[in-house]
Amino acid sequence: MQMAQFFYLPVAPVFFFVLVAVCVLVLAFCLIRRAYLQLGLTPAQAMFLLIGSLIGSFINIPVTVISTNSVTADQMVEFYGMSYPIPPATDWGGTVLAINVGGAIIPVVMAVFLLIRWRLWSAGLLATAVVAAICYWFSSPIPGMGIAVPVFIPAIAATVLALLLSRQSAAPLAYIAGSLGALIGGDLLNYGKLADLGAPILSLGGAGTFDAVFLTGVIAVLITGISSRWQGTKPATS
Image 1 (cartoon, rainbow, N blue to C red):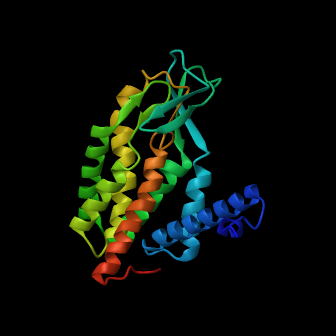
Image 2 (image 1 turned 30 degrees about the vertical axis):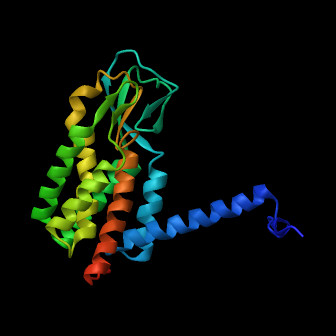
Image 3 (image 1 turned 180 degrees about the horizontal axis):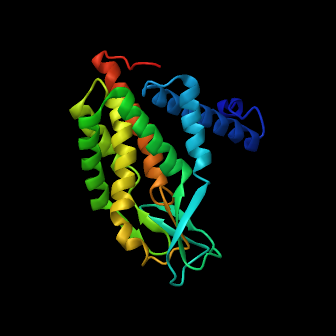
């Protein structure tokens, strides 16, 4: 009798892997939701922030045309192992500057809310300035796409600074410094380079920085949340 005969999938392989994917997604969603709860938000607020950031990442609000040079479109570019699609050219006649809802507007509003709620003015400004400087140092202009920041740089920098400056408020401080720092250092400080990149759409908080901003809100908060448990501290809830 072969023991291997007793090891087999109970369902079709395709359906089995669908079930595995569902389990992974549910686990990841629960971890991310718990991460945002470390900010002192209610479950409903955490859910709104998470889903709003993801859905909002599809929405870019055009602001102005910053260059009328020819643009590159409908291609894929690689940066630190990440693939970014270059959108098709618009009918605005050049490079359009836009603001991404999920990667810029929502994180900025949330960061300001946390600054006021937790009163992290000094620590928040200091940590944000340091993360912005680090993101600017590591940022790279990508022709046809915009400015890209390595995904984990803002999260790591924000986590270290938050734990050094305020363990009691490490989670909200990490979110503030990571999200604002990535936007300022990755996009705003590189504004002068944008017009020469030949991109059809340059979105603040969009391609190149959205993943860094979003993962900062997840990874940094998760790490600081775990640290808070080790320290025996408990984040406030609203």
